[in-house]
Amino acid sequence: MQENGLSKKEKPGKTAVPEVPYASHEIRLSCRDWILTVVIIGALLYLAPLVWEKTEKLDRSLDYRIPYSLGYDYWHYTRLCHAVATENVTVVIGDSVVWGHYVNSDGTLTHYLNELAGTNRFVNLGVDGTHPAAMAGLVEHYGRAISVKNVILYCNLLWMSSAQHDLQSDTEVPFNHPTLVPQFFPRIPCYQEPLSERVRIVVGREVPFFAWAQHLRVAYWDGGDIPSWTIKHPYSNPLHALTMRLPSADVMPSPKPDVRSWTAKGIQKFSPQWVELETSFQWKCLKKTLEILESRGNRVLVLLGPFNEYMLTDESCRTYTELKRGVVSWLEKNGIACHAASLLPSEVYADASHPLAEGYAVLARQIYPAIASFLNYSVPKPKSNKSDKPAKEK
Image (cartoon, rainbow, N blue to C red; front, side):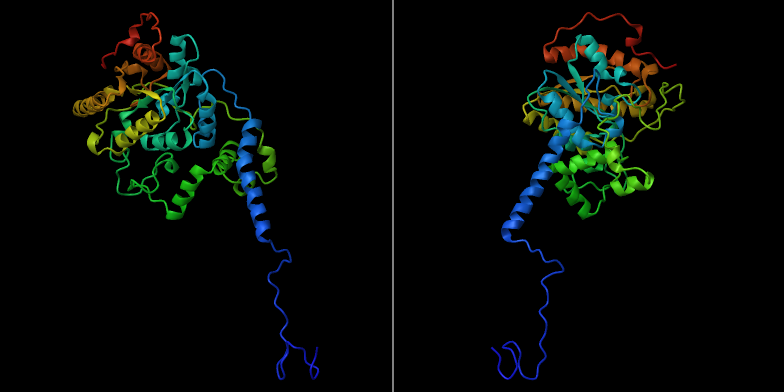
């Protein structure tokens, strides 16, 4: 109805203002539409990793270990843990010594333990570069499937050989697997990621989709995202890179390590500044890993690895011996099964803590009786081998 030629919305002396659109698009989601959208997206986030796991073949051949290039692929680690969870096996958890940094998969500690056992009883769950702080995060967030099993936890005192190795440095220092360490508490002085990145890491640990997305980046897109991959491969389709073929477990680290003994490489003796056991952050993290494993019903044997004492000066060797004695004392006092490996011959060490293939064979023969006793396995008759006895350094 109009009065004097003006609509109800118009007033005398004023120009009519056109109605402003709600948004640039004309489709508006109702509350019901938003709920449906969230449900669909949530289902895709949940189902995508599950479908991919069924599609991508996990070829666990004899002596399988995490491929070196997948060392930062924690979704793959979770998948491997799920695969061995239902098997009657003993898992061996540790750093690059367990993984076998200087050897192929058929030269690792688990290979020689299986050889002595006469069957594939031991599974290599070592990951290259996992210091105790990273190992605690790996087991807590990505190794939940390891429960009610026999576990051998490798303890490498190399990570307590300096304040920097122990993550006690006050200045920012890069280290392996930073996304696995505690992001907020306890505080790590040398870890100085911004708050937004720490929040992203914490959220990513609890959402499998994000770990799966990282798996795609690491396994197929050279560790980067699609835009960075397309820059390196401008004429290739990133979807074609999804070949469903994972790297071999025998691919060596890059650059390829020198597989000669430490003496042949001319490595000199050194005197590391060992941290005290009571103040060591890495030792606290190792105890946390042990606590997590036991809380999940696992039986744990802590294997104290044989450090290359030939590389140490006399004073440093005495400090190391006291540190090792303190670790064993604490474990025994708390009723935790442990075994301190004997010193290996000098010529079978590649560096301060890694044996060569022959060294792993010697180590397996030395520790197998203790492991067999822990697992109630029969102990094979040992073969005589002169290299089993430590050789004096000339």
